[in-house]
Image 1 (tube, rainbow, N blue to C red):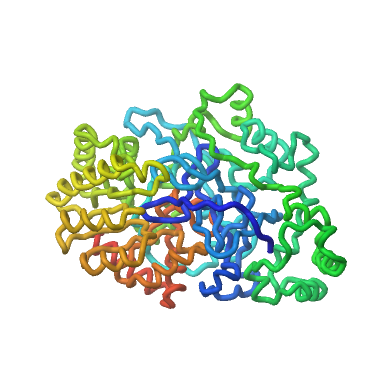
Image 2: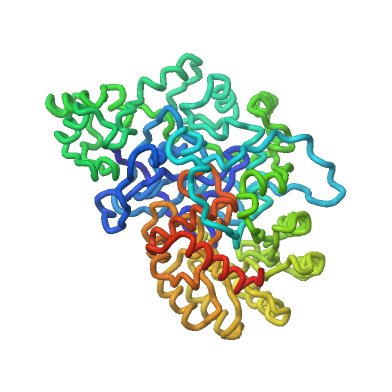
Length: 583
């Protein structure tokens, strides 16, 4: 029920928001808390009150130290809406610390967990990786790991589903890293003393907000700064706690929606006797209150998993710490992937999962995307040049794209992702960069249209120029997928009106408390939607990292927002994939 924290406004994905790139040491895109609803300033976003606690997961914490959700987050990259987000409340059982430093790195280049994974050498001559630890039997969601909320097996199935856009090689690298280094799945307060020492040695814990200052005994003192009462739902409060909450101005709706009603930046001594008495009835103490008012932070800004160094760049002491966490040089450098067949069987949904389209959209990802498309019948591919790689586009790269298209044959379904992206805070304003992107976009359209491929268009902060190029180059009836869209409603409506076979890609950020993404979902006709994860870059609420098997959760959210049965949404999404991609 606490507030405060800095803002971050960058986000990732083709017009998408709430991005989280995958950091070499941080794992995967950040998750958001379950059922997070906006604060008072965001009351216009309708979210039904939660039912009984057994049917709902808990609200979670960002690793950077801020509650994720409706007000945005400096980790997840959600746009700021309404009041500032509350600071952290560590709890006994939460899911993986998948947060990050702002200003992610890699193709999507948004805020997130740091760099996109270094792609493995996927050539046929590459040696086989060593045996891998077994994968979890189901996606490790917040509710699953925390022992709360619905288990994966208890959630009704939505039927067959398809992920229309992902970066599968990076997803498999992320899964592999989390399998070999389990501490990536934990918040700071969940780490053991040995794991804390390793994180400190690697520089992942540092800064003035850190409560663990090298004292091994300090790790055990974290609970002194935690008040578990704030994690309860209203119907879990004791009568005395409910009475105290009412005295503070809370009712059931305000409590469950996490509305901030308490003083900010006020010391315990300055609160007044009556307020201190009611807070004490809720389990508050000077130590726990000091944490919220800036005195002590257990998980605050001290966590930085945005480690871009290669294994050989680490000092011997850091290599020892990384090895203690479970890393090998290959897993640290993202040169190993989880087994695709195991992931599809155990994580992605098995028989209900009918496939995904992975992207080969720069020089580094082409070979890996080709190998994966040829390695499994449920993996398809599109090739092109991402706008942030436009500077590298030349005759050699174009020839390599054409070779990959030829090698994949019928597994090659579309051209892309490609388009325009002016979102970079510096290079996005540079006229030469914009001009180069437009040239590369037009050149690729001249190749894709004669070949007859549908287009996977990435447009971010470039609505006007994207429309101009498409109007000039693309036939009106051409099939297009405007991927991970989170731009303006005007652009969406123009695309649907002017290009009857254009479809709007909706990523997993719609599951988060993002009013703009949810309004786009409500306004876009169901028959014009394509669902995608854009994994592992864009997050889904309540998950350590995203992957293609989480499409059913996006389907459920769309069904909720549109008040349509889940199976009807699932069936329509499958028909839309068939209409665009022919599968």
